[in-house]
Amino acid sequence: MATRYLSDESSLTAAAPAFVRRHGHLPVRRLGKFGYNLARMPFEAILAPEAVEDLKRLTANVRATVRAALEKHLRHEPKKTSCSLIKRLRGLLPPQYRLRVDEVRVFYGVSGATVEVLAIGPKSEAELWLAQFGDLE
Image 1 (cartoon, rainbow, N blue to C red):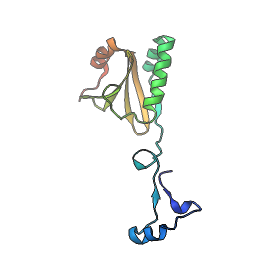
Image 2: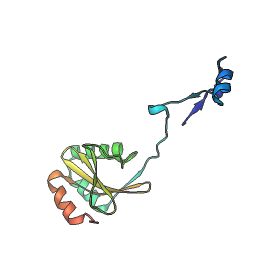
Image 3: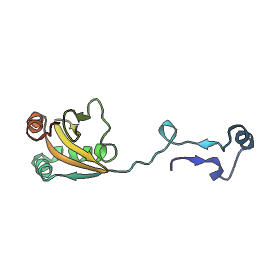
Image 4: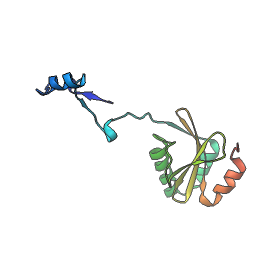
């Protein structure tokens, strides 16, 4: 529900006709942050076969943490970069991203409504993976 108009409700205030004369429309009740409640379409996360193997190599508690982070960060806004969690990797074609989960790094790409997880590995192996598999421009 993006916007609800007061006319949708049964009780309009007595000031509504004056508001309409002044502004040309009924008063609007906006919901959510910044005035609007926008529905976000979830992205579909697909793990590459190499990423599945990488995930299996992790210990159970780290694996659970990574799965929770994948669901939390990559499901709704995978391109939203932040100072510490999600970073867009420069110099790579197509644009790829890195998600930081404690001492684990998740490398992924976004195309349309699909997030493809390319690799999951410890921080110590991140530079090695980028050198070997990163598609440079």
